[in-house]
Amino acid sequence: MDNDDQPTGTVLSRRRALKLFGWGLGGAAAGAGVLGTWSVAGRNGAGPTGATGLPGCVVRPAQIEGPYFVTNALHRRDIRANSSGGPVRAGVPLTLEFVVSRVALHACVPRPNIKIDVWQCDAQGVYSGVADNAGQFDTRGQDFLRGYQLTDAHGTASFQTIYPGWYTGRSVHLHFSLRVITNSKVTGEFTTQLYFPDPITDQVHARAPYNTKGPRDRLNSEDILYRNGGSQLLLDLNGNPTGGYTATFHVGLNI
Image (tube, rainbow, N blue to C red; front, side):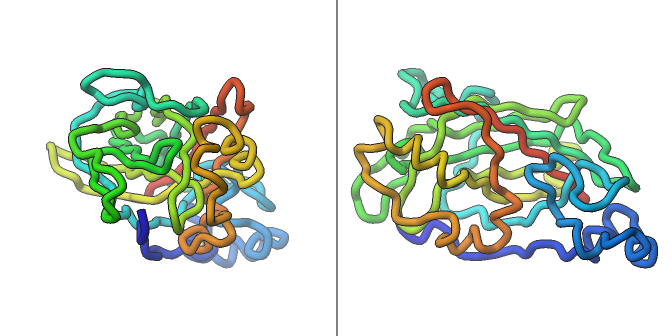
């Protein structure tokens, strides 16, 4: 599955990010080294780095949707199997929680009713609902590893999925989009990708069923999209390959 994505989007500058948080540039400069030490996105939204008083929600770099998004109405938390039934897709379990906030003046305001779509490949690097250009597989009519949730009153939504595999030309990743729905119309949208630490991927992909595909051909540092802000989209995983992993990803919206 070649040519998944082409680079797009930019990482917000510190100047633009500080404006989103309501910080004047003069006030920011007055804080000891704020402009020089605070990153636009603290690791996985855990909080600010190098400055006090900044909110824990963060602004993330957008990345391209790619060719494998398929419009569907799969409102579900567990996306591992086809909606028509059958076994779940084999792989190391992954529970992924999103926390969505509106970036306000020195605060993070939870955003309820945001539609979060997630789609990814399976342990063999295969997406559902598409035909491979090389003719190696055709999964049209299937919808495994796809689905959406709406954020609750706390701005959170959780998915049960598996650790992704890999395919030619890309490091290990999954896709998600956030959509603001107003009167049944999309009035705001943000799309990007999430990445996985290479050392953990090495452990996971050494196990069945991942290891039948062989070693991946791209590390994060070699991925053309990861180099466009991917370090701000890197998941902080808890767990192990035997019991599975959990991760929480924070994102601040200004839409």
